Length: 180
Image (cartoon, rainbow, N blue to C red):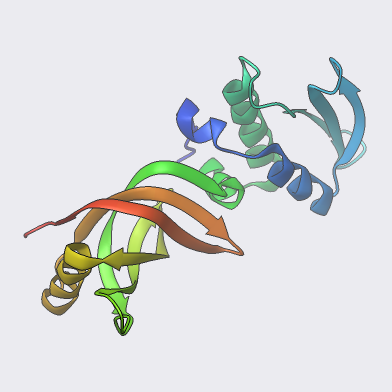
């Protein structure tokens, strides 16, 4: 089943520099710029009959930014024979105010000077199970320990950041234990 990404909030969170790096790494060539560098034209010649073109928006404030990113995902899905969700998960580097649900799989030793520590949650991010690190304090840290000990799923909201293929949830809040 082919999934088409339509969520404009997710699509607007994609940084054009990440897409540009992907295009360069996979053999695409930038062939021009349009509208005072508002966009870049990229082309890929697969074989004698197949040539593909992508219009990469370079400015987030363009009214059709999300639609252009959606078009890029469709084209790359065809060219790379991969799901759009797989491709998008490589492009996301920052997603603000995301609610994540999962299971605590690791808890670090608490800090000496205050009740806080790092946890690792196994949760779904863009339809794939991922390890997500976050730093919790006070009551939230205690709830995470309880969830870990009792193997209960938790849910919390924060700003998801991807750093070197690792996900970190910054500014976590609204932690809740989901009782089964």
